[in-house]
Amino acid sequence: LALEDLASWVYAASFWMVLVLFLALYLLFVWIFVGFLLAADGYSTSQCIANDDILEEDVITRRHILEFAFALSWTTFTTVGYGRIAPPGDDDGCYAVRFICSIEAIMGMCFVSMCSGIFYAKLLRFIGSAPVTFSSTLCV
Image (cartoon, rainbow, N blue to C red; front, top):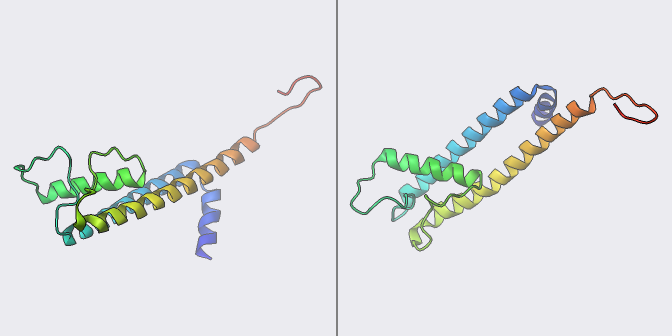
């Protein structure tokens, strides 16, 4: 019943309200996966979330790790994948982080397809209500 109520609200709500809802859901999903990535990185035997520009002698603080996890999460969720922050493929201890990234990418694709479908339906409803006058030679 709650899903039906949400679907009817999304259909009846304004475009901007739905946009704000989807942005809030996007940020919520990204931060949830940041937590999963940080937990998996904490249990791994090596540093799985790091920037390619970080040198061995650089000091990596908790703030850096949080920043790297957020960047990895949003690029994975949106499937942009810039490649500057990625779990290393040759480290045996980073399987959990790579698994979470793959789940996040699949959920991101589902989220984008759901959002685009709803926005298309809202746009189609708006376009379908446009006034059209027919004449014998021209559609105005």
